[in-house]
Structures are given as C-alpha cells and as structure tokens.
Image (cartoon, rainbow over all chains, first blue to last red):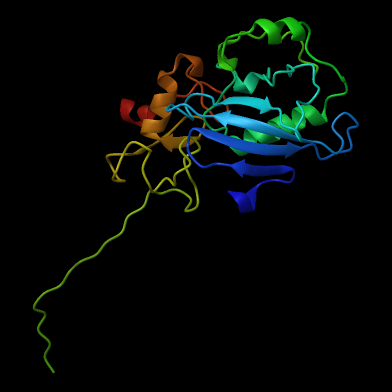
Amino acid sequence: MHAHLPPGITLVQADNLDTWLMDIRVLDDNPIYRNQTYRLKFVFSGSYPIEAPEVTFVKTESHPIPMHPHIYSNGIICLDLLDRQGWSPVHNVESVCMSLQSMLTGNTKNERPEGDESFVRNNRLRPRDVSFYFHDNTV
Amino acid sequence: MKVTIKQWNAVAAWRWDMPEDDMCGICRNPYDSTCTACKFPGDECPLLMGECNHSFHMHCIVKWIRQESSQDKCPMCRQVFKAKDAVGHAG
C-alpha cells in the first residue's frame, strides 16, 4: 500500500486489522489548512467493508483537528459516505482519505458545525450512531 | 526409435473469462481468487455480473445486498443491482 498512495496521504500505522492511522494533507494552497497535517483513525468492524469503518480525526501535539463546518472539534466527521446510508463497500482507506482531502480542499469556511460545543460535551454515541442532518450540501 | 508412453500426468489451468488484472471491488481479491470466506476458487465461489455490467464475487455482492442500507444498489454505480445471468436463464 505504501508505494501506491496518492500525494498527501501517508500510512502511519497498520499493525492490525482493527485500527489504522493515516495522515493527510491538503494539496492546494487553501489558507485554512496550509502547512498542516491531520491524523485520521480508521476503526474496522469484522464486517468491513460491508459496513463502513469508523473514521475520525485525532488530535496530537502536531496534528490539530481541521476546521470545517462538518467536522466537530472532537474529531467526529459528518460525511455522507461514512454514514450507513452513504457507504459503499467499494470504498477503501485510500478513497476515504481522498474524499476527506477533497472535502477540506473545497472548504472556504473557517468554522465548526453549529452546536459544536454542546455536541462535543454531550455526545456519548459512536460516530456511526449519530444521526447527522445533511442540511447543508454546499460545503 | 519407438517410444512407449508408460505414464502421463495432465495439468490444466482455468480462469474466469474476465480481464486478467481485475479484482472484486468489494473484497479486493482477484476474480480468479475467492471471496474472503471461501478457500477454493471455482464454481464454489462464482462471479456475478449485474445488468449494469459491474461484477463481484457472488458471495461478496450477496452479503452487501442483504444489508438493509444497500437498498439493493450496486456498490459501484448505485443502480438497482439485478443479476445479468438471471435474464439468460429465465427463458
């Protein structure tokens, strides 16, 4: 997998089939994401790829959570293809990373989703069990 | 010189009539290999082509279609997945 990854995507850790870590960068010069690298955690169930993996951004000293109106400050991502209804089993780690790169590239709003603070404080659900409302398809 | 054949061993190979480097988009194993559940390739682990011309290991696509969230759609093009073979056998 190392050799064939598209630009801006690196495999950080894939020691087992449960959890992988990937780093992504935004390739164009979007000022919101300039010079930053973001870390993604993929958690696979035994039913992957029939079921979507759980994909979240993780915060480390050198990896912030990217600013985006569909990314909560705890790293939970609201993206249709990661949702039960939007997932397709022909997606894979690479295609998910590329979709997230493109979701960031196209964004111009340096902001968190509405209700971020209370969601981050109160949410105890796993990302895939959260019902997001895809009310704003412009970002 | 007269040669008498005392014994011979026949060896044959088979493959599905599919492009050689192609793989099942769901399990990402080659078509000539099996789905993740099977051990031996061949008739026990066949391929299934949809009317949309997308094909998968039969076991892989059936597992997907059984999911409610699949809405019976092809994972590639999201058209309703109908097996192409079924059309041929109907007559």
